[in-house]
Length: 585
Ligand code: ACM
Image (cartoon, rainbow, N blue to C red):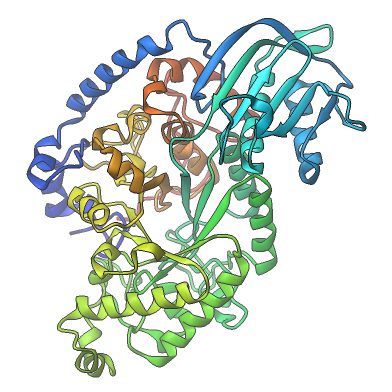
């Protein structure tokens, strides 16, 4: 194995990787293991499935209005007439978000608007759900009625209003201008998400994005009705969150990156004030930020800062710096006190996260030294733990208890599905696409699950066959596969009820620059947004492709460079963006 063991791309190279490449394709039927293996078809087979599916749903779309909105709304009905939003028109918007709503609508329409001053009907109105008539929206759903005199968004919740705002803004952006006004055809939209968790994970440890990039990302996510930002803040290459009780975490642990191992490299991290600001910014946009503090593996940066916490690691072939301090000492009082304190500060910074992600992945790659650590053997004897997996389980349960005690659910990568954690307080992130049985096991055990399998949800995989930099493993992750997901899993209604939703993950080993991170993210994240929001029967790849140019234009306006799959635009690599090639191994 030449890739870093214990490392997120370790499976890409070496014999094990090659064997898997032959075995694994993309389709992962969510039934029993043998059926799963049989369903592991090639990309070609998947595309066949996709095309058939789309052909069967295309009829539903035919003849229906298909406004240029991503994600595609659940139901759209054309109506007679036109609505014109004129300069100076009034908008009656939610009182606690007046500035954001007015700015969004004015910018989208290109006309100045004024807030409502009286109860008289305004050109644009945000009203309670009851005004929608018979089929009232609930939860994140909304109803938009564009009538000749007024456009009304009805919703039961602030999130519903916000999603309706985004739909209206997208319609206005694409609308023709006439006499200084912005003209929309009359229509009714009744819309609600398929999944409650529609997310994106950003790895800030391997390469740091920073506040400006994160705010821009949150803006674009909000427009696509994505509502979870999973913030991977700690890992072996760098610790990126200020913890007041442990200043060396950022004095030492925040230096360097995946491609810069100099001990005197500049520090890159978020101060607690910055984090509070970013959390508030996301909250205004109805995005919940879920922080991840990875443990007991992926701990090098923290252990470099506090060597007394060292649980040992391994050396990646040909390296001396990756990753000898991969784990926390799982049985030492100082480690437990440290992590308790870190989690307490994290809980205070993310008060409405609901969930704290504690990683829990790939621990066995770095636990070889555990049996020799003082305290581990006695812990095993005392707790009746028969092997290192038992120690890991003990550690997971203890830390999950701390997180639960702080009032949060625990989230972890799918390794924790084997740890028998409380079903009502634990969320499993299924990432190992080559282990569909783990997803089966998690669902059967009654855990809520977020779907983020490497194929097709890891955006460090290339998105076009001509692209040279990035991961491949039994194929890659073209936008079509992202869009089709999770149909290939063949989720039963029962399974789907346990699936919270889905997310894309950007691991940043091969994305040194922001330009490249944006390129790897977009427009695949638009495809994921539609896959997570739009009911299966309304998904239509041809329709998505026809709406994508507007989506790409909008990304550009937001300052986000994206791949254009229709034009097959040139791959953006870090070299082009002015940085050395990202690959190290
Ligand atoms: C992971 O990619 N190790 C969650």
